[in-house]
Length: 284
Image (cartoon, rainbow, N blue to C red; front, side, top):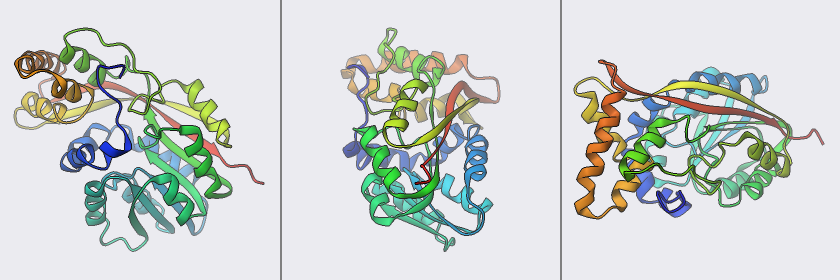
């Protein structure tokens, strides 16, 4: 994030970052729960009738794959993630679902070796490719003619204060908007995403704007629970970790003040905004 919170690369997702997300998967699922119905609706809308093969990119703990499988029991789903820890969580959760196969590896390579597919989907798993045009082209080459690609990603940094407000609070200054380097906000600009999809060979790209509440914590002592969660996950966490030890306490206190502002008496929830994208591979 232009020196303020470094972008996440594949090596981090495969190791420390993925390990933390695996420990916190229930928290991240809660945070994105408001987005889930919109993404699932879009995936089901584009799912073929009858039996079909699907592929999830960056499956994380397997939540979206499980949701799709429940609504589309005729689907054979291969779900891929680069994090061994997240793959283990997903495998455990999908152990009783014979139509789901969880695989470890890079999505570009795994799609090529496991395809062809009739549907690709992803919940916030497509923003981390070092070369997104190359990745989207490889994914398009791994599908059958006319297959659909459905994915979600965050909208602008400013419209997601769980990241922007907390990141700036941790840093003690207003942070600049992230660029298009791999990271959570790489696909915030819909014109850029449309260009990436087109350059990768996808057609009929459509974006749907979704506003939702990013629920960071609820239950007993939600403020402290949200602080604990957001010190592990997200841009603010990486900023705090990068600070000298004598500056961390001040950063944490500033984050706590922001979190308290978003506590409604029952839960800590931030406004959030995402895109749900739909695109299609050419018929021939």
